[in-house]
Image (cartoon, rainbow, N blue to C red; front, side, top):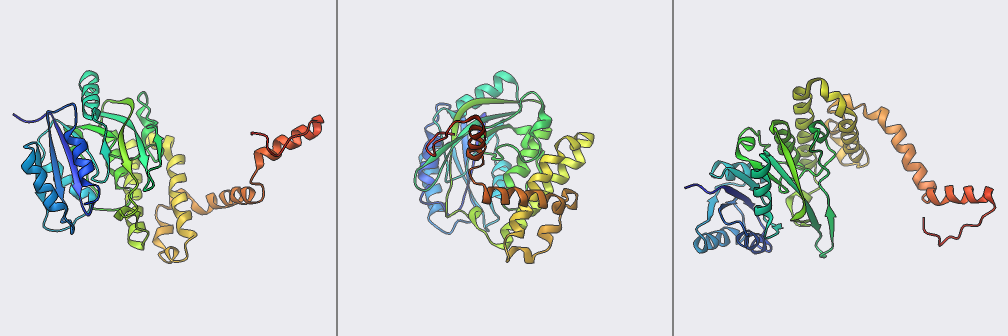
Length: 319
């Protein structure tokens, strides 16, 4: 009999964090799952660690790849080797709350949703964290397209039929959004569990933190995939999200323009000309200049207002 849930964990060069991740999965209050560890040809001790866990718990399966193909294709491999009705992705340097799968599975079954989302905690290497709220519109799905919400696939619980339709990207920065935007489009119903059930670790050693030319080219390609997918599938509704999409594209191009090395690659600035980057650029720069010369704009506004009213405003006043 097949498990109801498949938890897919791509593994690459995370020997420092892998125990924490897998242990959090094995401690789940919901137990009818399989955990598929995809060793993406990891050069450290991760392959042996995965095999050790598989010997300890029959719910764990290990897939050893013969070459490194990157995170999204490792997720795809995990899915192809899974059998659960529902799919949960977990990155191997992250960890999850003990009741995460139980809460998301219950919400999916009771609501009949194709996707269930949740909030998350984001941690840095110093142990500091922030509470990230999934600002998802469960009433009007059109508002979920573009680049305005948490793009992570890991705080989302998918029905198998949704993932089976996904065109996985080959690699790259922000590949999560390529997956989630397709999933949102194919889902008939989406719901949310308002708890921080996923704990995301901002790993400074992660490949996704790289800042070389290759990474930015992959980021560009994934942005364009999302834009092209939405433009081709939303029809007239694309215009409702075009402003948000163009703003994100132009912020990306602005990063390129500000980097002497990156702007040597002209294609990073010229892709998707519909965003009208140079028309966007001038008012954006003016806003930066205003912040540079008037960093305490709100304080100054209150100072001027009180000056005309005869009141004094202390520099220590809370604004």
